[in-house]
Amino acid sequence: MASQPRISRVFGAVNIGSFRISAMIAGLTESGEMLVLGSGHRAAQGIKRGYVTSMEEATYAVRDAIERAERLAGTHVASVWIGCSGAGLASQIQPVEIDIGGRRIEEEDIEHLLVAARDSLEPDGRMVLHAQPACYFLDGADGVANPRGLHAERLGVDIHVMLADGAPMRNVTEAVQNAHLEVEGVVASPLATGYACLTAEERDLGVALVEFGAEVTNVSVYTGGMLVGLAAIPRGSGDITDSIASAFGIKRFQAERLKCVHGSAIASPADHREMVPVNGPGDDSSGPIARGSDDRNRIPRSELIGVITGELDQLIGEVGRALESLGFSGGGGAARGRQVVLTGGGAELAGLADYAQSALGKPVRIGRPPQLKGLPEAHSVPGFATLAGLVLYAAADPIDIRTVGSRFQSTSTVKGVAMVQRVWSAMKEYF
Image (cartoon, rainbow, N blue to C red; front, side):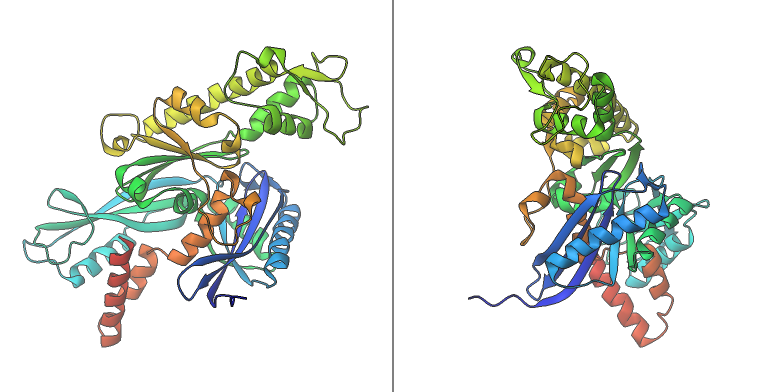
């Protein structure tokens, strides 16, 4: 029997969604492989469109999800990374420049630039979740990964800043802390999901990531290797479920099952001849009779798909407008890549990629979590991409300008210079 690989670090993650709260415990082996030790999920409580609406219910749901993961992992975690998709997420690129005077760029110049970038952060009362260097530019040339050793009059860097509303984000953090867990960090779901679903080449060429959640749809654009824009739409797959429930006068759980089992984003000529049952195998037959159903409480599949596509027309229309506002629908810039990646629980709807490709006029694929060792098949679907991305993000530990800036203040000692060199080496690896 082969020996179990030795685990060098353990990561805990909790993704706070409006439909489900999921948790994962993963270990990084000494060989650098990510191994899923345990994962679990449960229905969300106390969360509405990414905002905490009941602290007690949200805390209970978080505690329950992490305990399910711990039981499977056979170990406990004291701290976790949180994934969050609501709380007013916003994204901006903040350029910062310093004068070099035509000489060769040294490490000290990059140090000075990053400290200047840190000091220039102006969140306007909002919480800064991430402040990461996107790419360097000098004298009109952009997309420079490593400016050291080059000559320039001026050196600049684009800082990608991810903002959130402070009070709602503190509520999310407190819900996790009340579940007796320390918070390692809060990660905006577009960043975490990008780690899980997008290749390095896609992020470099330009790609749009659409996270189709239950109550929030996040539209983010990557180019030059970094997330450069974000728009949040307060609609999701849960709104499709509600429309089905309303259209046929049935309960939400019945509408959800109809959507998942018999629903599709693409109509077919045979749909009007197919009758689909409203009640599941174990349902009470005395429940509500669907509006327009036959004597066996079945509805035409064509009517179900009509409700679904009616909602999708509105949602994908908003996605298209968001992409346009982020510069992804024009002729240059981030539009070069053209590819759109759909993920999130809503992306599991049959036929959605074909529907979105036709509606958006761009190539579309479904984004799933990477094949991590130990990841159960039930969690290898788009709805769990953010959860897998959280542990990958935690392991990568990308540079944050706020942390780098504070380290750079102690460069007057030999130890400080060594720290600068180590951070610079890490940045070279990151880029």
